[in-house]
Amino acid sequence: MTKKRSFSYALLGSVRNKISTPLPFCVHALGHALRHFPYMEDLPVREDPFVELYWCISGSGKFYLEDGSEEIMRPGDVFYRLESERHYHEIVEEPWEYRWLTFAGPLAEPLLKSYQFPHRCFHAGPCPNELYMRLERLMRQKNDYGYRESVAVICSILARVGGEGQECSVDPDLVGRATDVCSIYYQDPTFDINTLASILNVNRWTLRRAFRNSLQITPSEFLQEMRLNNAYKLLRDTHLPISRIARECGFADTSYFGKVIRKLTGSTPSGLRRF
Image (cartoon, rainbow, N blue to C red; front, top):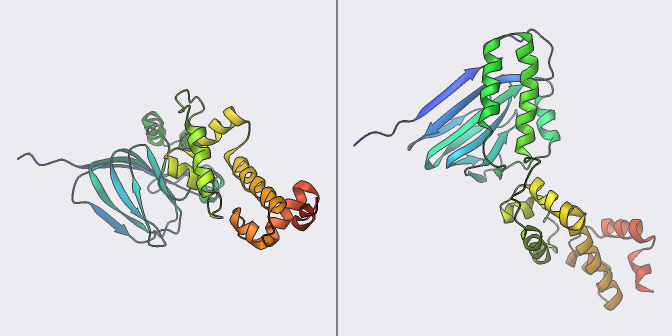
């Protein structure tokens, strides 16, 4: 029986080569891996801080989060780790193939956080192999231009994580399915666009574009409208306590509910009740 062959290829950037030009962040290392059973890594936080991005090509793997929960990565999914997080994952379905990228520097973690990607496995589409290969070629140059240009390529990879701009294949029924899900979960204060995208198994940016194209509003704005419309109806047609109406319409905090109502209508919830 032929043994299944795994491979793990890595190219070291600032791990090995001193960056001579001041940069907000730079490539720490990148790699390409194909894993078969058994495979598991559990490493402590590194002394030299960096952020790490994984992009799944085939198979699946499991990442263990800091709070003890687990995330499954499937083809087209992305997962990232911040500087202070443990390096702990294992294979679920073989062959698990993925590309990974680490970058470091004073703005590495703030940059990644600024994109507001969900901090779990989420779908981003096919891995942009051509960008990883370009980044590798720049790393091999080992000159100031290569280091500076690599910053731009990392940003291009992060842009792809958010979904490509030309999405002609968006499901035409996506908005309809999304509104159905919102009608089921809008009463839950923790329900938001990230949860909605996860339930529908789509990228949040894909979902946002679909709502913009169909309804000219964002999913978050739609969800807020749904909550407020139901709140107005309950205020007008029932004698339920305002605190209960707030809870039943997805507002965990009655005070915040009152502030939202006043901002949009100029009146308090009890004031609306008198009209």
